[in-house]
Image 1 (cartoon, rainbow, N blue to C red):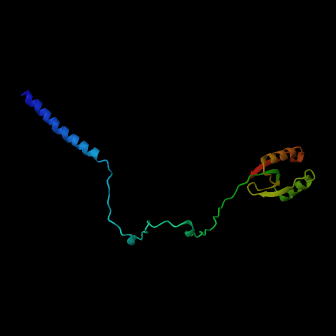
Image 2 (cartoon, rainbow, N blue to C red):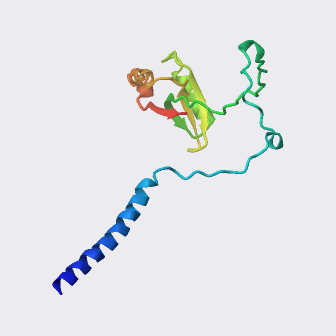
Image 3 (cartoon, helix red, strand yellow):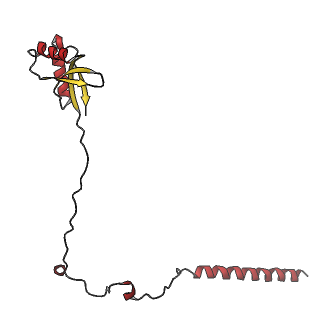
Amino acid sequence: MKTLEVFSIILLIGIFGCSTSEETTKQTEKKEPDVYIFDDVQKDAVNIKDTTKAVPSVEEVKVEPVKTEPVKIAQTISVKKFIIQLGAFTTKERAEAFINENKNKTELVMNIIYREQIKLYAVQLSPFTTKEEAEKTRNNLWQIPSFKDAFIITSE
């Protein structure tokens, strides 16, 4: 009886082993990608040009220039300005009086600007383009008692 059991086991292993190896063989043999074949399309039906003709030479190709509109770039370049403020006054007359009293103390041009944010008339010098230049001028103005409160503001 042992022989029959051993034979049955070998037979079962052979049956299951063969089918498994057969499936594995089918999977390894199928390495080519699937190929899809579409119906033939007539060239005239879709207006396809024949590409078998010779390519034209450089002299035969005429390229028309493309007319384009110029691109408008709306970009503002912000330039920082450094302004020395000498004083601020509640009335324009007081700002003018300050300028008249001190115009002989410096050759710099003093301007009156109404500053809406603070609701005052500010006496300022013309803007400087560099901070260093504004600081140097302010430091020189501090030597004059009338301009001891001068300070730098920036604007763009």
